[in-house]
Image 1 (cartoon, rainbow, N blue to C red):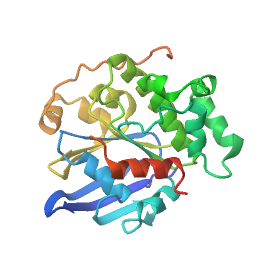
Image 2: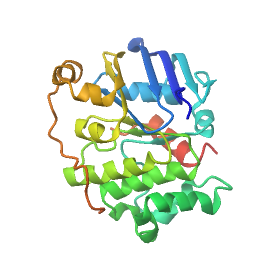
Image 3: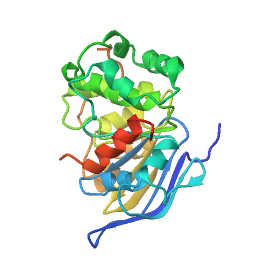
Image 4: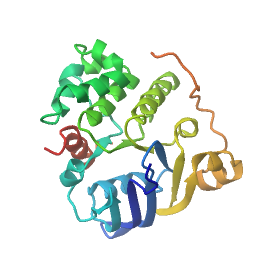
Length: 265
């Protein structure tokens, strides 16, 4: 297996309205598993994702699959295989599960793509005719992640998938991401350290628009002093059990999710 990063970000800088938001972020996403992007509120996590996706003007280097992409528009990045699951999941509540997936289907995807999604998330098959708006938060996250998998993406960016969810639903979302990472590498933007502890092999911590730490997730999360210093918290109590039986609107990010769902078509 290649040890080269799937996504390599170097010296990423973003200036919005004359204000410097990112001052030179470095970020690697491993070619397998889950890489977590952490930081306090306002550290620059969302702007980093927007920079990677080309949703804001940026300078620096963003290499994906070995290709420099920093000058490419968002739709071109999506066509190259970056899938985006936004914070609000972007599910069409008035449509069924099957219709939500069908909207995302890339021409020619066919049965193998659906077979992968249904293998990872069998509930999407059994609930195919159910309105997406009646699903739990965890089930809606299955739809959001399932749409990205239909397109044969090489990387999934999951933006704060547990934000505002009840602990039981957080556990469901953890299972969703755990399954997805079996098929496609995931860049997980997250605040829940219990979730990161369970899922992530690698982590990057931002502080004031800069990279403050990069390395194995287990090492950082096992060090209470480093966790307090970098993230402003001690050991989080957000429960994400190891085993559990299955059970502000951003127009630019929404457009990226729509492009991702459609495969950049």
